[in-house]
Length: 351
Image 1 (cartoon, rainbow, N blue to C red):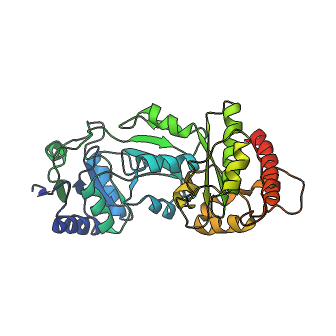
Image 2 (cartoon, rainbow, N blue to C red):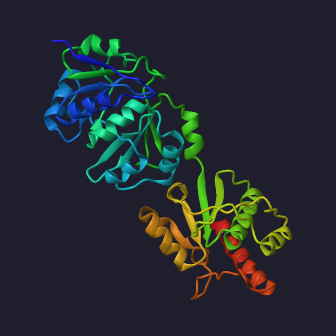
Image 3 (tube, helix red, strand yellow):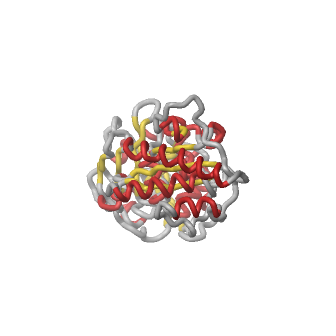
C-alpha cells in the first residue's frame, strides 16, 4: 500500500493539511514532513512503539538518540537543565534555522532544533507533543531534498507524507554540543564552522540599573574603554534598565562625566532588560539588590550569572548598592561616578 501524499503550500500551509498531519503524529503515526534542510520523519517522542518502528524502517540502532524539534526557542526549558549564554546566542542567531544544539538534560543530553519552515513549525505546534524528526532516509543513504527522494525507500512504510516541494537548503543541520567547554562541533552542515565560532568565541557583559540612563551607562562606557585598551576583542559590553522605558538618552550629567574620560555617549538610547538580553549574557552586573531580584524573577536560569557590581569587584564594603543619582546634585553624580569607576577598574582585571 502506497503512502498518502498531501501537497501543502510551503509559505501559507493549508490548515486542514496541518491538522491531518498533526493528528497522525499524535496517534502514533510516522509522517514525512518538509524542513528548510531536508525532509524528515516526524514521530511523537513519547510513543515508544512509534519510535521503535522509526528505528526499524530507518535501520538505525535503537540506542542512538533522536533530536527533538520544537516550534519556540523558549520550549527548550521544558527539557534541559541548562542553557549556556553561548547556546542562547546561537539560538538567537540561527533559530529558526539549520542548527541542532545538544544540551544537558535531566537524563543525559538532548539535541534540539527549531526548523525554519512554516509547515514544519505549524505541524509541531498543532501536535502539542514533542516530536523527533530524523531525515527521511535509510541510515547511510543521502538525506532527501524532495518527497520523491524520501519515498524511494519509504513508500508504504510511513503513514503520511507532506509535500512542500524541494527543500531550500538541501544540506542537513549543523550539530553543536554545548555541554562541554569549549563547545564542540559534532557535524558541520548548513551552518559553517566559522559562523558558529564567531558567536561562541565571545562573551557578553551586561550592566543593569533602573532606567539605563546614568549608572549602567557610566559602567558600560568605562568598561568598554578598558576592554579596548586591553585589546579584549572577545568581550562585548552592553547595558539595560529594569524599567520598560526604551529610547531615552543618557542624562546630561552622565554625558559630561564620561566626556571627561574621553568617552562619548550622546548616541546612547536606553533599552529594557529582556529575556533575550539576559539569556545571552555571560556576566550580569547590577547596581542594586532590587535589580538582581527583578532579573531573577524575569529569568531564573541566569541566577548564577548575576552579581552586584561592587560585590563582583570585591570592594570592601557592607553596602553593595550603588544609589541612583537621578534628581540629585552634581556632587552626588560625581561621587556615584567615582564609585563605578573604581568598581569597573577592578572588574576589568577579573574578566
